[in-house]
Length: 166
Image 1 (cartoon, one colour):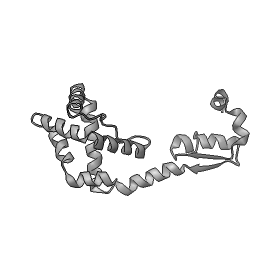
Image 2 (cartoon, one colour):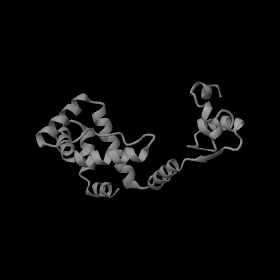
Image 3 (cartoon, one colour):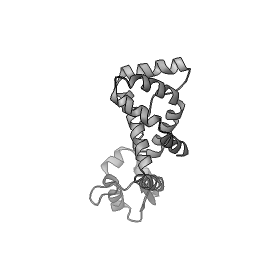
Image 4 (spheres, rainbow, N blue to C red):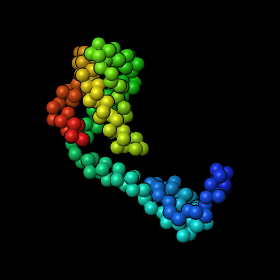
């Protein structure tokens, strides 16, 4: 409770009737979870699992067994790390975008704490920058096996159709 007092939350404490959070141990742990600590002083408080978080987990569970979804996630992560780990590749991709006259962006990370927005942003980048990705990776595929694998996935019509419907 000392941290709550230090952060200036004490004046608002009598007004707490409910608390929504993810079900992580730091929030809902039996000994030192935030909900447990708050309930010591406010036993009437009701803790609920955050609806947005549960919806995101349900969405992720729905797709994790789908082979095309796994392949798409592999492609998006592969693109992200291919360009994130190499300044040379980023520079060449930007040059490729200039030549093709595309105002695309570098790939975004598809995983994270807010998974659905990350996926949406990664897919938007994929479609906006698709011609530059294809052009650059085809050029790189002669000497780089990772680029060759990524370009094969980008040329997979079934996978790209699946991505468009997602």
